Amino acid sequence: MIATRQVISIFQQPTMRLKIPLTMDEVIGGIDAEITDVEEALLHQIGAREAPFVGMDKSGRGVCVKHLQGACTMNLVCPLRHIVGDKAVVCKHWLRGLCKKGDQCEFLHEYDLTKMPECFFFSKYMACSNRECPFRHIDPETKMKDCPWYDRGFCRHGPYCKHRHRRRVICPNYVVGFCPDGKECKFTHPSFALPAPENSASNNKRLFNHQIICHNCHERGHKATHCPHLPNQQGKTSDVNPITNRTVSTVQPVDLSLFPDKKSLSEVTCYKCGEKGHYANRCHKGALAFLSNTAHLAQEQREKDEREGRYYLPGAYLGQASLNPRTG
Image (cartoon, rainbow, N blue to C red; front, side, top):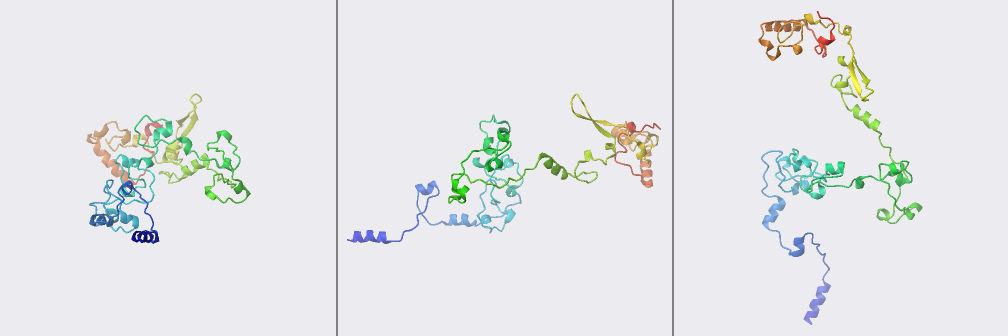
């Protein structure tokens, strides 16, 4: 009778939620115990000291629980790792020990095979000779995007389309007007909206060149080497070689009337050796020209030019011997 009452009392007790084991230790052990002092200290990070300097390598440290809760007060000097956002790819520089960003890196500083970056050789050559390659080998067909025009009904590129054409069965309920399964439907729910136009190569090139700033004229759209405002660019023309089909640049004679302030070589004094007839960048005496007997004349000529306030164009000293037809 007593045993029957105990059984009835057990069944009359309110049902409690069963705890689902998350790890193998819980499955095997399955022993619920109180939290010890050590576990509580680790959980609340009691006794954690600040790092000796900012940017210290924390690869072997644990994750800061307080930072995940937004309650860490040590910020950059915290001895534990601060994970920012959802990092899905392992940092390739951290794998070689060369990452300098530390916790501020936008990639994952953790060795996880499922989140390794893609193998460069396999993605480009479809082959990797390293049998123990730690990077992921992804089939290029799986990276191809579905063609939005084909999913809409028709693609004019046909089999030559760079996107994937995948045949699927259209959901009859969705075509009529409503599908009760929604996103979990095993059939396809087509989209009849027009796909967004892709940027052509010319537009991408134009946008890319628009971001370049010339260091000579400070205008956008070209580099300093191709600047039309350079003096040495005014006499350059480009011809096409009919044999190699390549562009060959030729130098045309420069009109020296454009530079009225330029002196002839007979009036030019070298700032290294002090002799007349050549510029310092064409000096034949080398690095020890300042030890020559006429070196004091170079200093006098330099002071004289500074007093007169003479300024020369950037290209005035370059190629003067070949561009100036006057010999003095």
